[in-house]
Each structure stands twice: as C-alpha cells, then as structure tokens.
Picture (tube, helix red, strand yellow):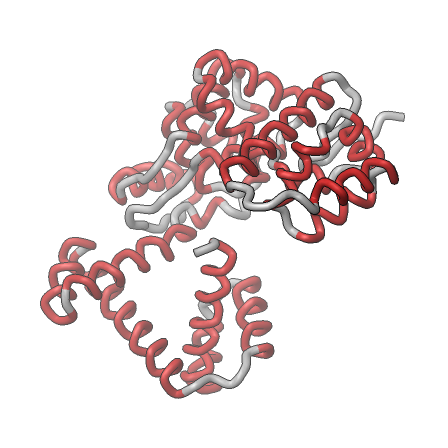
Length: 337
C-alpha cells in the first residue's frame, strides 16, 4: 500500500475510534495529542462519511487488540506480549498486532529531538561514532538532518551518509542506549520496537535540502566509494516526474535534446498532469510529431517505460552539470545581489 494511503487509512481509523468514544472521552484523549495530530483528526472527523456498523465494530476490535498488545509489551516486552496474544488470539492476529505497534511507535523514538535546534543537536552528537550519528539523524526531520550533515567534518560526512542509506532496522536495546546518551543532555526519552529507518529515499531527501556544494561533494565521494549506492541515491533525488516541475524555460531546453520516441514511451507511465506539462512546452512541430507517433504506440512494457525515463533523467542531469538548466530541489537558496 502506498505510504500516503496507509497514513490516510490510519487517520480514518483513529477518527472512527474517537467518534465511538463520545465527546467526553474524546476530549480526554485529545489532551495527550500534539496540536498537529488534533488538527488532522479534526479535519478527518469533519469530512468523514457515514460509517457502517460493521466498519465501526471492526475498527474498535482492532483498537482493543492494540491496547491489549501495548499493555503486554509494557509489562514484559515484545516477546512476552506476542506469547500471550498468540495463546488468546492466535499466531496470525498476534503477529499483526505486534507489527502494527512497532511501526506506529516509530515516531516516538527520539521524540524529544524533533523540535530541537539543529545546532544544539550538532553539539551533542558531533563527537559520537558515525553509526550513532547516522541512527540519530535517521530519526530527525530531513531539515534537521540536512543542517547537521552540512556542518559535520568532511572526513565523516560520507561515512554517515553510507550508514544511513544502508540502514534497515535497529533493535530496541540499541535505540534505548543511544536515547539515554542524548537524555543526559535533554532529560527526555522514549522506547521503540524494531522499525524501518533511514534508507536511500530518506538520505536523498536530506541531500535535496543541503547546500549544493555539500551535495556535490558527498555524491562525488560516494560514487568513488560505492558507485551502486551512489546511483540508487541519485535516482531517488530526481525522478522523471520531477522534470515537469522545472521552470518552463528549462523544460523547453530539455526538450531540445530529447528523442521524441524516447519521450513518447517515457510518458506512457506518467500522470495526466505531467504529460500535459510536457506538451505545453513543446514546439508545434514536436507536438504534432508526438501525436502522430502516439497513434501507433501500443503494448509498451513497463521495463521499457522505466528505461526511457531513466535515460531522460540522465539528460536533465547532464544539462544541470553543464549549467544550462537549474534544478531547485526544495532547498533555500541565497540571493546574490
């Protein structure tokens, strides 16, 4: 399931539970939520359609199971909770409940650092082992991570990036140990179960936000150390659909170097608004050629579409390297006057 759809489904379930609790109980629950969580729940509740009795019952049953699982985890840990739940609910249900709890608790690890100033965090972690720094940055916001990564000594930047990109899951014990390390300075801590953190997509978002000089240095050095990993990260940083987000003058420059057959195949896998953006910036002649060739294009394989998209992204990168186009990846640029 798409992460955005999964988040939406989770919010709908949370809203269903709140509605089922009644106004008095719901108001008590809201006391324990952050302002942004209350805002999202309020919007969800206000826009919800009528719910069937079956939907409400199924959601409340799941909520009750999660509450039980959380209680058992608190009492004796994950293994204890799983053993008790397996006896009472069966192995399949127990595994599902434990999995949902450990994933939902992901945001609670290092919860105290989300609003911390990056400069303060940098002071706390700059002398730690690169693996420790990588773990902490994986729980930070991308804005915090990019600010800290930019200020780390050059000699450890690449090491930290590689560790974040190849990170998979971290045990509760390790997370708690590192939290205690930071807790001594900030006096706050949470625990968490195994959870997926870091990864190439995350570090790509971080690198999209650092200054251009830092990004270029890191990617160049990373390509020397691990070309395959470097390419994976680069592919996450800029994808085919991002071309449509460029300034019109840059899209037009890009189209000058494009083979119409390649573009036609690449657009087979693109959303309607992306396709329209390309056509808006084409010359009349190119547009007519594309429309004519499209009449005979049938049965395109997904692998061919992806290959052409990668090829065209490479064209954009070459144009950026030569300074003919500029890609704004969400970073705040300084204005030179």
